[in-house]
Length: 287
Length: 250
Image (cartoon, rainbow over all chains, first blue to last red; front, side, top):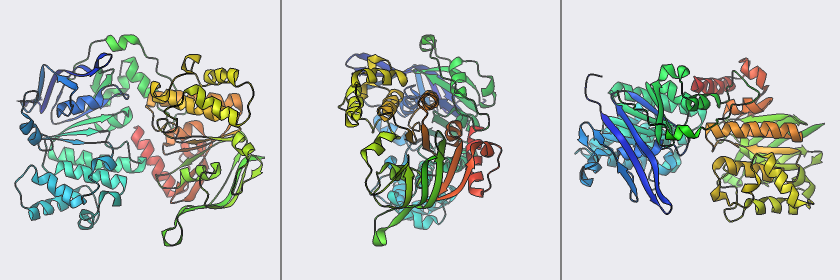
């Protein structure tokens, strides 16, 4: 990579104070994100979502974020004032959450929400914002965008809701998109469509994408680089195309535990967890 | 004799102008010891069929014969002893304030099972949980362990037919593999008949021999899993589903 990375994270820790002591959700993760698609994969509880949220400083007390470096485009996130963070969130760095049902405001029309999202970051008139919202909905392949603008979230389907979320997040032209399980609430047949749209937009605009998912095969298909997380650490990183040559037993276990339609097996392989994986130092995903 | 024989099943919700037909004119048979899968997008009516069989939806018409019993508006107690259901979300389907012991013993007491104490121990062994889990509450269990408890509860009264409603979709792939293996083993051991609903063709293909593909409440196609693997689906909709799931694997 010739230019400086969009996102630079070194030795990131996320800690929670609990009654029984401090719980480390993320334990010393390092990675960089350029204009590329980076997949972060792991099971529930592996710290992948916490890593995504920490980048936007979305972890509230008693959670704590610590890092040697946490920079967006060279700007320090750890010490930025809250006011600056509000400009960054949604402006330069956007996040798509898992379920459109819970992330869209149920009492505002789609149009109002899109316009609000854009006007929070750019001084544009209402009419201009509405025009750009229309264009954006068209780009995420929503038919008849003028009609959809006046609908409420409960009047659209899940796949449409997620495309509306993508449109909303891309309206202010962010440089980094964090997608946290963007399709796991959707049907298989709609999943691919939504992913294709996201993929195309990210590529056309030269954005950096951080794709968080539990589905290793899906990530391998849509990303350039993959980081596999286990117990708050990155256990392995590889190029997406070289996933089949992965070495770490955890990665192999994840790959083999998926039932394969074309190559049936009588029994699925079950992951045998080795306590040593927890203790092994985190692999750096910096380039 | 077939374990399940469904003919011309219609299920609807609401009435008058609000009526929406969830299942339209569905017929299928499941043989004893067979495993039948129902596949389709959300809203296609696949879960509704299971719920109608289990007696959770009163508004249906058609003929359903399950385990030799023609079903009417009410199910007999003997029916529930033979037919049990496992639900999608183990976080929602277990009572948060009852221990595993209480959940299992209540199911058995309701069906007049003798010797509850030793049977609970055996059930927990069957589903791969040790005796140490017997007096735990659901919040002390992981998602996979909870689903094992839900399966144990379904097996508590020795059913012949188990209805599985997306039993692994709330779980991680690694845990999903454990539960699918468990279901395979239990089926062999107890000679069970399964009807499984899932949107994941890989999962259905792993566990079932035949699948019914649904769209908008109707059966589009019923085909053997072997034919599906050999890409012998006749209907374009089935091929579309197949393509999207094979593509997501690659």
